[in-house]
Length: 230
Image (tube, rainbow, N blue to C red; front, side, top):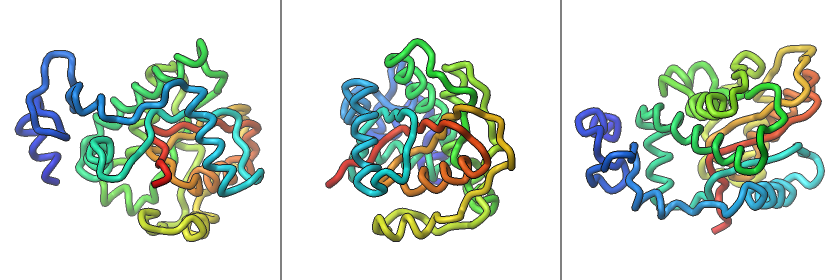
């Protein structure tokens, strides 16, 4: 909880470098954010996301469209920021990342053709442990920018899976197989599934499979970052 305490005591300090923020900056200073490895265009992020998932799943995990704002590198400024967002209680930072991602999505089209936004859920026990779901907060930020409804009720995590961090691609897939459950007889035609970071796509694939089994016709995906192959 060190990051959370520091930010509560010094809210105008960058969570990465600890330097003071200037007017217009929030959570991260401009210098640290410039170090984030941004995608050049929304279509470039879609192409790399498709390549990453196709390399793991072939044609078994198809999605309508994909968006990621950044490439995730280990030991980077972005990793520090996302770690604070996910584990240190800075849920407003998650919302800020979501608003960035929503604005990024609008750069590619006037308004994405989606009916609603669905965050990848945490198991209830893990949500109690962390106090909030970072993917839900990211989804809230996207929903505010796109003016689309947020549907927390459509997807539930029914198994308290272990963290995906450090697992191989095969182990990640096995870890989340059957972990999600959706409402029966979904009437949603096109939904946007939201997570924080895509590594192999295993979590997104498992969540999308549950949603399709419930009747979702089209699924697009979005995440703050896509893990780079290193």
